[in-house]
Structures are given as structure tokens and as C-alpha cells.
Amino acid sequence: MKPPCCIYILLLNFQLSYVLVAYTPIPRNSHCATLIGNKLYILGGDTNNTSFVFTPTKDSFFYLDVSATFNMTNIPWADLSNIVGTPIQSRAAVSAGGPNKDIIFLVGGAFENSSYGIPLVYTFDTVKNVWNTPIIKGTQPTRRNSGWSLENRMDILDTIELTWSIGSQLQASTPRDVYSATLLSNGIIAYIGGYGVNGPTNLKEIYLYDTKNNAWETMITVGTIPDARAHRSSVLVLHHQQ
Ligand SMILES: *[C@@H]1O[C@H](CO)[C@@H](O)[C@H](O)[C@H]1NC(C)=O
Ligand SMILES: *[C@@H]1O[C@H](CO)[C@@H](O)[C@H](O)[C@H]1NC(C)=O
Ligand SMILES: *[C@@H]1O[C@H](CO)[C@@H](O)[C@H](O)[C@H]1NC(C)=O
Ligand SMILES: *[C@@H]1O[C@H](CO)[C@@H](O)[C@H](O)[C@H]1NC(C)=O
Image 1 (tube, rainbow, N blue to C red):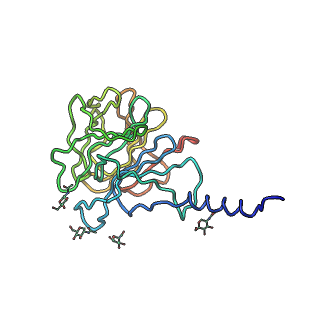
Image 2: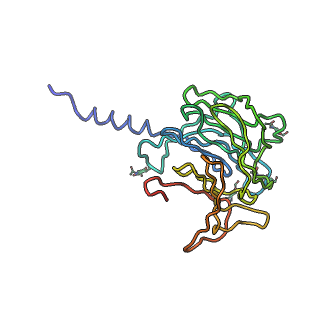
Image 3: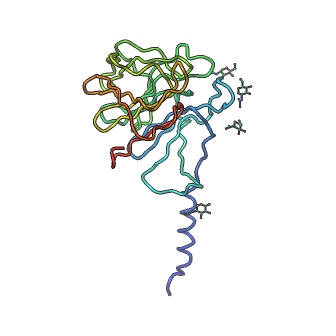
């Protein structure tokens, strides 16, 4: 006698819907994100949209696996907030670093109540799932947290040697915050927009920093130039170099 095939189908359906159960992050602003392998890691953020008093999110660390397609009404976020040592912060800078580019480096940022005595740099090993606060050699920069303190000093963190150094200041961008910084595939970082001493900066001038030659250059854009603005993001689409 043949086995009833409908039972198999029911089980399969059950498994599929079980896998899709996901956690939903709290709405936030001023968080940071970095892509390592197929995982987009989101860190920190502020839940208070009416004040500059930092109201931290309770879920301050989670990721999205972007290797497979998913249904936008049920995004498969995975929560990592319970990992011991997860910093509760907003407005930090994060980047992937280390010899295998699999370590998250979290620099600066605002912490609840006060950042006094809090390490400037946290690292998260995405292979071992462990937070650390490494000792970094060289001249430690001041903490930046986008709290209306405008900077234009280029501080460079070598994520393999764990050393701070200071980049060229010659023809550097004017002081600003809440700009976007995009690393192009030729090793140049494009600094676009942001908030300067006179308000939002124009998008006619784009500041380019060449990480290979430690040199700045100003690019004057042409065409339909968007309005001056801050608090925005930018992303490089590698296929077209745009
Ligand atoms: C600000 O947050 C409150 C809840 O905390 C929400 O009701 C409101 O829609 C938010 N406003 C904006 C502009 O996001
Ligand atoms: C946001 O900050 C304001 C001013 O400090 C405070 O009155 C308000 O309760 C805060 N909102 C939340 C959702 O924490
Ligand atoms: C996505 O999920 C919603 C809600 O569960 C469902 O109604 C919709 O059909 C799904 N879309 C796809 C393409 O699977
Ligand atoms: C910040 O201060 C509040 C109120 O005193 C307290 O409940 C909270 O635990 C403090 N947060 C940290 C990280 O110390």
C-alpha cells in the first residue's frame, strides 16, 4: 500500500512556516550597520525622536542574513542583544576589520548617561561571537558622537596592527558631521554632504580622500546638483561604479 502523500505535504508546509518565525526590531534612529559576508549587522540606535537625550534601544545588536530572498512582511532578523558585553550606544562608527575582515570595529558613539570611562573601541568577533575592548596604540582621538561637535581631522585605525594614526590635513574637507562616507573600489573615500558651521553643506563639492596616497582632492560636480543636505546615506553599486 502506498503511503499517503498528503501527510508529507502538510509536514513540509509546517516546517516552512516554522523557519519563517522572526523577531521584529524596535524602530530607531542613529544606529550603525556593517556587512560581513552575507550578514548585515545593525548596532545600537536611539528610540527618542523628539530630543537629543539618548534613549537607548533594548535590542542593540542584531543581523539580517541577506544571502537568500525573504518576504518583506516577515523579515528574518536574528537578535544578538543578549551576548555578554554588547555596548548600548547610538551614533558610533562601525566597520569590518581584522586580518580576515570578520571583526566588527565599533568606534566612539554616545552611551547612556555618560561615556566617561567607556572604551573608545569595541570589537566583535563574528566567528567566535565574542565582544572585546582591545588596547589600541598611538594617539587616541576624542570621542565623536555627532553631538554638534564638528571635526575635520582624519583619524585612521589600523585594524590589524591595532594602531591609531592621523591622516593628511592638506586640502581636507571643511569641518562637518552627519555626512556620508563611501569607500570606492579604487581606495578613495567620497565624503558627501553633512552639516557644517553654516548648516547643511552643498553637494556641488565632494571631498575625496585617497587612502593609498594619504591625499585629499576636491571634486566639483556638474549636472542637476541635489539640494544641500545632511543626515542621509549613500551606497556604491559596484557593477556600474556609480
Ligand atoms: C516619534 O516617536 C513616537 C513614539 O515614541 C511615535 O509615535 C511618532 O510617530 C514618532 N515620530 C516620528 C516623526 O517618527
Ligand atoms: C524623549 O526625551 C524627552 C526629553 O528628554 C522626554 O521628555 C521623553 O520622555 C523622551 N521620550 C522617550 C520615548 O523616551
Ligand atoms: C508574504 O507574507 C505575507 C504575510 O504572511 C503573505 O500574505 C504574502 O503572500 C507573502 N508573500 C510572498 C511573496 O510569499
Ligand atoms: C542611566 O541612568 C538611569 C537613571 O539613573 C539608570 O536607570 C540607568 O541604569 C543608567 N544607565 C547606565 C548604562 O548606567
